[in-house]
Length: 202
Image (tube, rainbow, N blue to C red; front, side, top):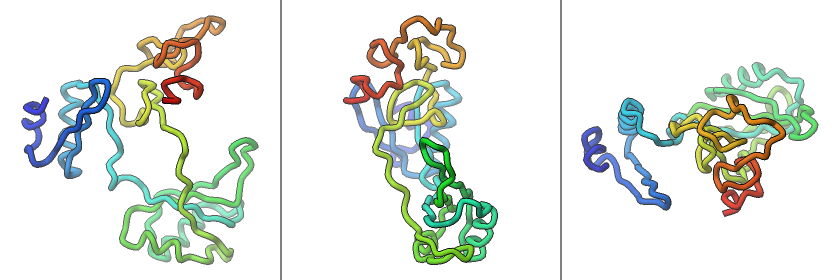
């Protein structure tokens, strides 16, 4: 494996770490090295998963106390007049009732002035509070391979069905709805997304 990696990258550009379950984590030192390695893995059809490059992630904040009727375009336009490059503005809805709340997610492009957005007190003639998003208190699960710790957008592992545990996309599953489900992770009689699964708890 090291020989394979060194054919694509110089030895000083990466290092590896052995993890449980015959898994090896590869860390690279630059974005260019990351892209070259991912392209090589994809070209050679090597099963792997990865994560979004840090520089490509948006700088997300929450705007509180903005009325839900304010168009996102107006919020974006005013933030951009203040020197912020806005990628997206999204009104937050109640998790259960889906009712619009006086909260907005704002995704900014990375820039030296990102943190200055926390100094804003007024926007669109409304008194606001700018907060960091709450950290999620659950482990993310890939809906492609069903493993934890990454998402389907960055996964090239084989498909595993969340309902029957078969090696296919869940959208193509032909399991009889009346038949018992099978967890692809522990083999139990529940879907792989079940939060009571022993693998999830561990």
